[in-house]
Image 1 (cartoon, rainbow, N blue to C red):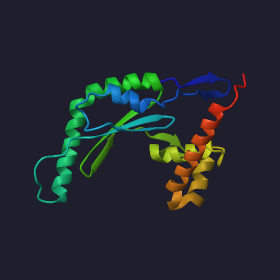
Image 2: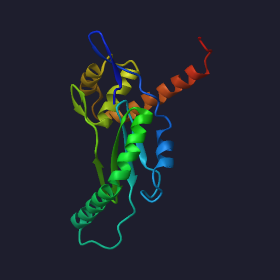
Image 3: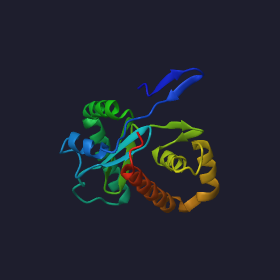
Length: 185
C-alpha cells in the first residue's frame, strides 16, 4: 500500500488521511440488504474494521450449541456470498483512507471477524489492543507503543476501558479547543 517513504536509514511512516468520515462513507457505500442497520466501524492507524448485524435466524433450535452453529453458518454464508463485493469496497476504502479494511458479522449471540489485520507491535496485536496503545501515546502518557504496552500491563489492568474512554473524551475536547484557537500560520 506504500504508506511510508524511503529515507536515509530506513522507512518513515507517513501520515495517513483522516478516517473521521469512514462510518458515513461505508454507510453510503455498502449495499442496503447486507446488514439490518448501520455497521459498527472501528478505525485505528492501520485498519478499518467493519462489523454488521445480519438478519436474525428464523425457527427454533434444540439448544444453544445448535443455535450457535446455525449463526456461524449464516455468517459463513454471508462471507462467501459477499466476498467479491467486499473486496471491491475494501479496495476503494483502502485507496481513500490508506488503511487495510477488515470485515466481520454478527447474528444473535455470535460475532465473527474475518480478513482482520495483525500488526507487529513488539507482538502481534489486534485492533482493540493497538487502539489502547495509540491512545496512551497520543495523550503523551507514553513515548512509544512499546512503552505504552509495558505501562498498560503494569498499571492499567482491568480498569483500562473506563479510564481510556475518559482520556479519549479529554483528547477530543483538546482537539476542539485547538480547532477553535487562532490560526498560527
